[in-house]
Length: 502
Image (tube, rainbow, N blue to C red):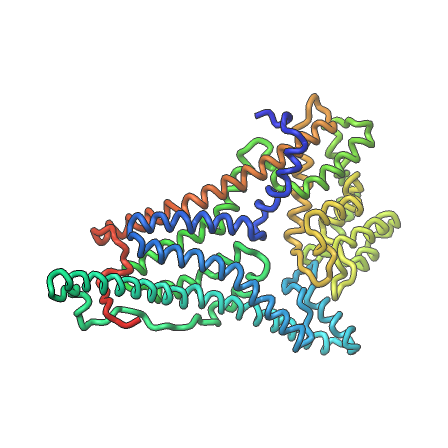
């Protein structure tokens, strides 16, 4: 397919959907995957166990997805309202922190200022503890409640519905037999005095799940992955026999990879093996901001710039004197404060650029204005897009309002990775040059390739996960049971006596 024939209208219409689907923190791609998985597993269940296994599988998968994705979020918001109303704790602050950002400490300072309390080390420390404990408890409890329902309560409800349905069917059959023969033909299983082997209901151990709680607030797929331990524990404890327990273990453990790891691994592989695949290191929405900066430079050079000069002009250079400056700077954990930088560098132009560059993040609670090592390098490079204005526009497109919000957390690792992605995007643009020149037409081609690769990489990862989760894993699960037992039957009902009252 000649991508240059794709019209700009088609490109624009695809951009937002592809960007949204490619973002693992959004719910839509997770919902699409869960819909596919629920449908596929339910079909496989019906083929083996008929309507009984179909109903159990459909109910468990559908209710689990809805309750986990919606329930945990609702509980989290409910916790925020309790914190605001009774503890005077703001709702929208993040718990993470690193050498670059300190949202909890920033929030603590804001709370003390609002309460007109002195910002002393002790007051600050106590307020931080209050915030951290609340955040931890809120997320841990919402996770615990959701996990307990999905792992412990839902299986019992499902099994109770199955027992009720089977007892109703058996009673109906018995009445029919009595009306025909005049004798009771209740199955031996119903006359047996042995009881249905049902494990007792037990709650999730919050201590074991608590260490996972802080990761559950912002990432939809990670919510699914991090809940696996508690849900798997509940499902295996509630399994009706050893065969069903083995199936649950196999299904849930193998599924975790395709829910969480496969999309990442697939994208990384495709990024390296597909021509110009590294263009997909930046999402198709953010690439608009990046290409706008590229276009500005191309325009400033009369609409065309040689590929040889392109990287140097955009990113600048680091000569020996600048490298010597970098080597002399006392970075700590990849970060340096502006105050310390001023003590080492006396060049007023460099300090002016560095002061502006600190605007890429809110002030650090302890260090004031800070810069990462990569940001100092950009200041020294002094390229056409390494100035604060260009970098701010591109970073704002990537991280949104969280970029400069003192109560929000954007990890330094993400910031550094995005900066590396910009350099990679420059290199990949050079590879797309025609006749050794970068023009507006080349930039349009880069835009289309970025969009198509982002869409294709997401689709491949999605299809692989959907295929395994909906079809191949259930088939393998059933095959293993058949090999072990000699029966291709739903093990949840094997050797169970269904004469208990529901």
